[in-house]
Amino acid sequence: MWATRQFALGFIFGFEVLKKSLVMLKTAYIFFLVMNIGDFMVGVSQKDSSLIIGAIIICLISSIILHRINKSIISK
Image 1 (cartoon, rainbow, N blue to C red):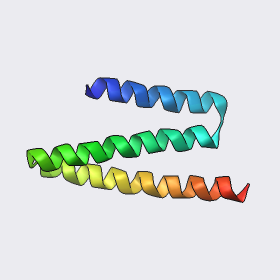
Image 2: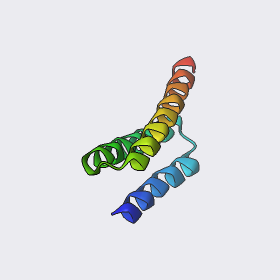
Image 3: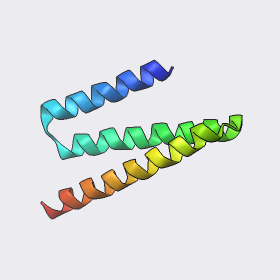
């Protein structure tokens, strides 16, 4: 399951690079954010503190990047 998620994420990022589209990049980071929110929930249900901490950090980074992408899309 993890490998499939990573492959899908890599495919989305690769497609974005080929299209050079901020909207596709935004879509890729939304997918990444949703995936890590799921990891957070799994960590909580399994009481795995390392998964919880990692998911929180990656969610924060993804949120910051999405905010910056939104600012650049709006300013165009």
